Image 1 (cartoon, rainbow, N blue to C red):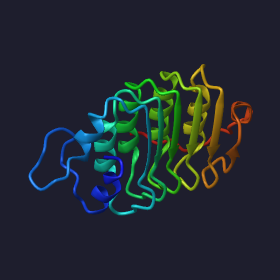
Image 2 (cartoon, rainbow, N blue to C red):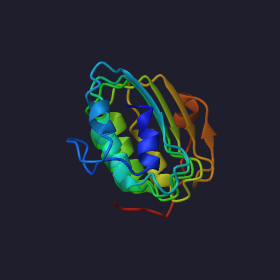
Image 3 (tube, helix red, strand yellow):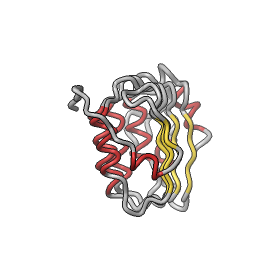
Image 4 (cartoon, helix red, strand yellow):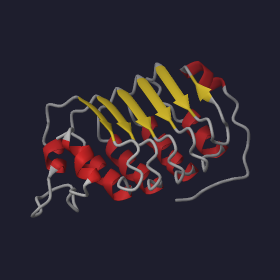
Amino acid sequence: AILAWPQAVHKNLLPKHAKGLQTGKLNVCDALLNDTSRESLDLSLAHFEESCSDSVLKLLAESLPPCLVNLKLSFEGCVRITDVSLQALTARLVMLKLKHLHLDFVGCKNLTDAGLRLLAAALHKLQLVELELHFAGCVRLHSPGIAQLQENLPPSLRSFKGSFKGTAINRNFQNLCDFQEFKVKASPFTNEL
């Protein structure tokens, strides 16, 4: 199912809904969701600029297997992704028992602070020990959203890496201490979902 996802996205073969077969559509959604023994998932839809959209990410979020402990997703360069995608993803993340999370949204220029606030609220509910977030080039991210991330890191977190070059703070972080100690300056920009 994992190997089929990129091809299904690229060739527009995903069903309209995560559950239930549709004639002529490859049901990678059900296959992934029903992989109940899967604890690790590493999936890249990077550079699927036009074919990776909010509806694709929503299907993927709904299809994440229930026993995941390690999750690594890349949507680098997927310019059609918006805060709606982060809303769908975070709604599913809080249902999982993740310990390791790696999300790559580099160059997803339509993500805003509203989406980052949704992610921050979800992260606080997780028992993560390792978190890696990449939002470099997400030009609509400003200080309020990044400050929310700082304030809502899971107490269980031991390792953090993040890239925010090309955002309002224009900085990368190699460890948890650097991120926690960074003083986010107030920004007049706010975005609502």
